[in-house]
Length: 334
Image 1 (cartoon, rainbow, N blue to C red):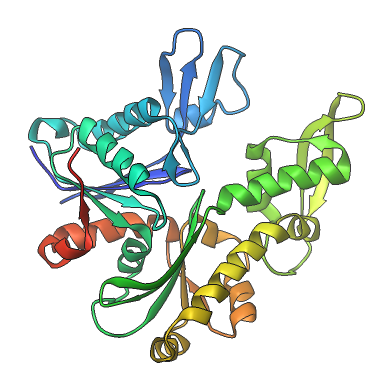
Image 2: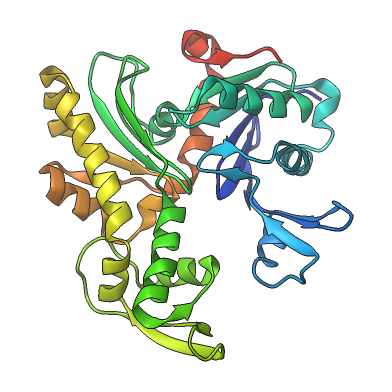
């Protein structure tokens, strides 16, 4: 019954890889619970549909924030649910679990992730940094002494790293990701239009007309509440307005990329000039982000195919050749 399992335990989305089956699960990292009874009533996609639409005694929450566990018990329930759904009966054989972690989390945060994996039914629990897994999932050969640059933009964090010989030579993590874009849009609409919208509405607007570069003008309608009258209100918002709204989080990512490049050894910089910057993670889907980073750095930048699944696909590469990566994984006893 035991199978090796890889988990991309993201702030916004959880993906699960099962050996022999591939990536079998991709669900929102959201749990709905009853506040009076503390009972979990929905997990994943079903819970996401409840965001902003629940009565006062039901709350839809994300138990991970900025890439780390903030509600351990809820995270454990969510993880058990997803693992059982992805590999029914998996806990009988207590498989090896490989869990992706942001590069910058603390030892206490790492131990919490490992403990959640163990209590969810894993046997040996290994942790590995997301930039390495994202690079492997993107098909990069990082085993040799050549430089590769990865920019992995998740929901809660962005990891920027230069990789060589299966290690991170230079790395910066910032707790700014796709969620920060949504939060910036919420703040901008409130400030500029006296209108309150939810983060789900902001996310939909970002997907519809958001971009990192000035592009063809596009429009979408958002709906919320007028701050002055308290009444429902609709608003047509365009791509130029959204671009202005997300300027601050884009600036954080831009500065982090330039900081990594500034500290990278010249020999590896030559390799990166040849190969360019590889963009992974759900945040890489923001329209024009590759051109934005290319303009800022003077280097080619490319978004991989299906960037959301890169980390999960990377766990497959590691689990298929686990002996080759033993020195680069963190096994934590809990």
